[in-house]
Image 1 (cartoon, rainbow, N blue to C red):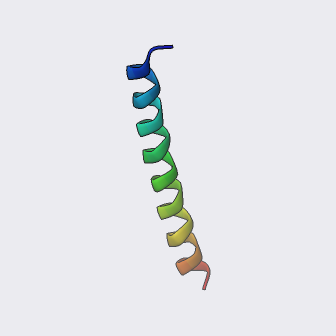
Image 2: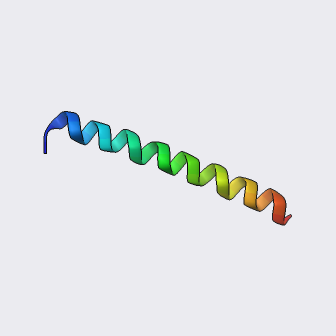
Length: 32
């Protein structure tokens, strides 16, 4: 795997993690 692919995968993973965190936050607010 090339460095460019690795960086792209890292960025996608970070975006997914951010999206998941946002959903969890909304879920906690709704559950509260």
